[in-house]
Each structure stands twice: as C-alpha cells, then as structure tokens.
Amino acid sequence: MILLGQRLRRDGVQLLAWILATAALCFAATAGVAEAFGTEADRRTLLALAVANPVVLLFRGLPSGADEGAFLVFTILPFLVLLGGLMAAFLAARHTRAEEETGRADTVSATPAARRAPFVATLVHGLLACLLLGAAITGAFLVSGLPLRGSVAVGAAVATSSAVFLGVGLLGAQLFRSSRAVNSASVATILTTFLLAGIGNALGTPSDDLTRTESSALSWVSPFGWAENVRAFADDDLRPILLGVVVAVALVGLAAALQAPRDLGAGVIASRPGRAAASALLSHPLGLAIRLSAGSLVAWAIGAAAVGALSTTLSDVIDELAADNPAVTAILDRMAAEGSMDQGLLVTFFVMVGTLAACFGVQTVQRARQEEVHGTAEQTLATPVARTKWLAGFVATALGGLVVIVAVAAVTAAGALLARGGDPGLLGDIAIAGLGQVAGAAVFPVLTALVFTVLPRATTTLGWVLVIAAASLALFGTLVRLDDDVISLSPFAAGPAPAADGVSWNGGLWLVAVTVVGVASSVMLMRRREVATGG
Image (tube, rainbow, N blue to C red):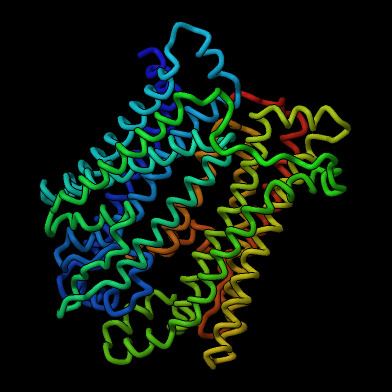
C-alpha cells in the first residue's frame, strides 16, 4: 500500500490531466458531430464515403450505423484507445524499468518490501488509471445525453484495451534493459495494432446501405479491433471485451513469470556488446545523438514512405466515388480546404507524415532525458563537452531527421504518382505539402527541448501529448467543423499547403519563428540548468 500510495502521489497531476483531456475530447467530438452531422442524412453520406473508400477506414473506426452515438464512436474510438494505450504503457515503463535504471528499485529491494511489491503496486496503479479513464469517458458521453448502455460499453472498451497495453508495457520492462527501449517497443506495438485494425476494417464487408461494415479477421488480432467490434451505441456487444481481458491477464502473467528469476537491472533480451573502440562519429555530441537515433530514424522513415505512397495512389478511387455522389464531393471539397480533392487527399496524408516526423523528433529529444536519468549524461558532461552543445546535438538530430523522414515520404509519393501516370502538376503540391509539414513538425522537438530544460520530469509525457493533440486537431477539426482559428492552433494545420490558386502560406512564418526562438531559448536555459537525474 505504501508503494501504491507513492505512485499515486507521483502521478496524480499527470494522470488527472491526461484523463480529463481525454474526457474533454469526448465532449468536443460530441458537440462537433451534433453540429456538423445533425441529421441522419448527413451521417449516411459520410458513412457511404468511408465504407466505399478503404483509405478512410485505415484511420477511422468501424462503421456501425447512422445513429448519432454509433457515428460518434466511428469517428473517435480509435483515438481514445490510442490515448489510453499510451497512458498505460508509459506508466508501466516509468514505474518498473525506469526505477531499475535509476537504482531506486535496488533501494526498495533492500527494505522488507517483497521482491514483487513494486510490480504489483505498478499493476494496481495502472489498472486504476485504466478504470478511471473508462469511467471518465462514460461520464462524458452520459453528460452529453447519450444512452447509458452505449456509454458504458465504450468506456469499458477503452479501459480494457488500455489494460492490454499496460500488459505490453509490463512485459517490455522484463525484456529490455532501458525504459527508452520499453517505450519505443510499446509505441511500435500500439501503432502496429492501430494499423492492423484499420487494414482489417478496410478489407471488411460493407452493408448494402453503406452504413455498416463487418470487419475482416485481421481486426481481431488488435485491441483496437476488439474495442471497435463492441459497436457501442449500436450492438453494445461486450463479448469482444472478454478477449481483451484474457490477453491482458496473459501478458501480465507472462511479465510476472519473467520478473521472478530476473536480476534487477538485467533484461531477458541481452544487450548487444559494444565495439571495443568508439568510432570517430562519437567524438562529438552531434555524432552521439545521431548514433543513438539512427535505428528509430529508419523505422519512422519506412512508415512515412508507406503513407507517402498511399497519398498519390488512391486519388482515382476518390475521384470515381465523388463523380457518382455530389454529397461526397461537397464533403471532400470542405476537407480539401478550398483546394482540389487530390490536394485535399495529399494534405491529409502529409499531416500523417508530419505526425510521424514529429514523433521521431520528440523521441530523439527525449533521449537526452533518458541519458540524464541513466547517468550517462554526467559522464559525457564531465568531459570538455559543454551542456549546451550536448543538448544542441539532440535538437539538431531531431530537426535533421524529421526533414529526412518527410523527404522520404515526398519521394515515394512522387514515385507512386509517376508510376500510375498521374498528373505531373501534383509534384509541386507534394513539395509544398512536405515543406508545410517540416515547418509544423519542427515545432514539437523544440517544445520538448524547452520542457526538458524547465520541467525535465514532464519531458516524456508532455512531448507525446502535444503531438497527439495537435495531430487530432489537424485531422479531425475540419470534419467536425471547428473554427478555422482553432484548427490553425495545430502546427500541422498551420504550415504552408497547396491550394487551388497556388500556395496557402498560412502561419508558416510563425512556425519558423517559434522554432528558431525555441531552439535558442532551450539552449540558453540549458546553460545554467543543473543535471537532474531523478526520474
């Protein structure tokens, strides 16, 4: 109980903010859907677009009907599961592997506390957080006037899927020796299962009236798919939740079994031995940052390449669908922000590319925090290396890497366009969309660097929250008819973008100014900041 109380006090504000923000997202989505799609005809039109166009289902939920509640769940549920999964997985890594890295787990083990006490306390803490998140979501939908049964179903679905990813984090803490590796593996698992569910929905069987889709078997290997097949406010089928419970119990049980014989500080997967002598690259802080981030750069670039290729290969499907349905044309025109439908599709996909690039940038700057927590930053800073140069190396790597990621996506988009004989005029639009996302994505590693210098313990949480919130606003703000001034608060939506008459520069100059000022400020603040090794 003492360890549980310590964890609750440590995470109280952070978890409360995360949960309340998720509930607020539910409120905003409910109000936005009611305003933008207040009639069943409006909802049927958009569902027809989604069901007839598989790419929409890659990044939305599972259509279950045109009723207001079911339509709302279709638009928002995957992102509620995403937020819950990240919350739970990060919590697991923070209170298990990170505690071992900092040596606090050794201190606890030296007390009368049982060896399993920290693991059990983290498990109970995580389950309480998942249940509270589910309750907050249920409450948000109830207050919005939606039926009780459906509200409970969607809250239970999110809580259960979050518990599954809690198990993923706990298992990763046994497999890997660093919390950085645990977090990276957890994020990769969450994004992979998100994509699997989306592909499973895209390969599903639509109903005759195009308002419902039966997902394919692929969706059933993903916690996102289990939550979506509950079909809250339509079927309210709680049986898929049982599958999530079984998997969560299995993951936690496996993690507990691996934790029992494992030495503190060790991982089931042994670390690869390093070279006997360091390469010349490691003689400079920038080279160190590049070396630490090379693997993740390749992974994020591969994902961006896939998204880039999709951005120019699906426009024929969109054009054919829109030609047969004027209502769909109207929706796509609105989503295109006054450009052509091809431009609108391109901008939407490149927002996803920008999100991937920003994730790499944030993750790279967070490595500086990990180095600090591990104590390796002190060893580096004990040499003639200045702390400003040390941080600048991570920031420069983050900014340079995100440019590479967006460039890779632009090249694959252009290659796919030319391969299918598309309009060469879109090549310029690809370059503009890529430039806009470089400007937008660059803001996030810079903001993370500022958080690192001022509130080091919040580096991981705030870094990811800012990216997820901004991406959600840019992707769904237009869909739910938020005011343009509100949508433009997202850097992903504020950058330059292709338009019907050329280029819409939007807030590109402001993004560049924020980035430059942010880099200078973080480096200046780092000059006098003490090394903070506490996790």
